[in-house]
Length: 136
Image (tube, rainbow, N blue to C red; front, side, top):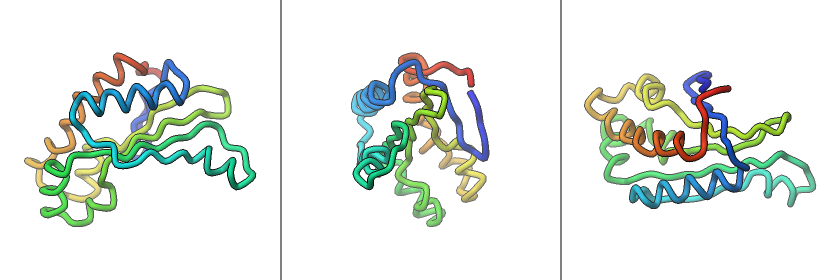
């Protein structure tokens, strides 16, 4: 596991597409809404450029996010939460996301609201067991 500027990156055991499908399944099983799936590499291809597989999942739970935004409106720039699944130049696949503690520090929302995004620990544990290793 690597953390850089508040971004946690986990090495995926699967292709980008397989990892995305597993994450979608985890989110659905946890009742977490997937708002959008952005295919950055697909968009690059349509623009005539090559980019390794890169997809962004945008997800969340309004019951968890709304109290954060009411307490600290700037957190809305980082909500809904996001997971980036990408392939590097060496062909390794990664899952990257913002650390909940980083978001708390960045926006200064009250400690008691950290649980609203730290609850994502459950899906992160599931993700690690299904798709990722902790090594970079």
